[in-house]
Length: 195
Image 1: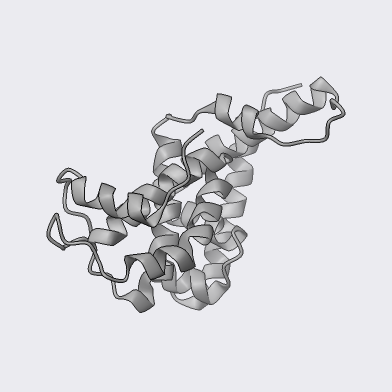
Image 2: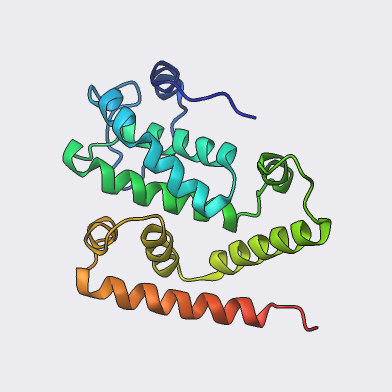
């Protein structure tokens, strides 16, 4: 289990972070950490972790994604009033990339599941875990924009928030989400084991 992220730890990591390829929105000097990082971190951390956890199914992995996203944000020149959307999209993209890279840690997911003290039927647990794995694998095969729109919308963002975060028109969000759901269903059916 990873240690909870603190603002001081994040600032320290940001200062020591090795040079990486320049990413869109990251143009600050390597040692220059934003003055507004703490305020943005405190207001957006829960949302960033929630979006990543929805994709990954693991709070531990979601916290790792959040740390990476806030490190990127700490070096970025993204305006503070756009931080929420930028961080949410970055969390979705980073989590989806983690899924696509095949570095999922299924042992953590299994250990992180909280349930009643009564042991449920083992067959039900196996089916539930397999269904989650299937959905995550199918989600990783979706086009990036569709997957991001689907994850953000099902994470509780409004159509307007999804549109702003993904630089789409609000009218196209519903269509994109419906298409993503349709493609996801086809992917799930295509890779379902015949019974």
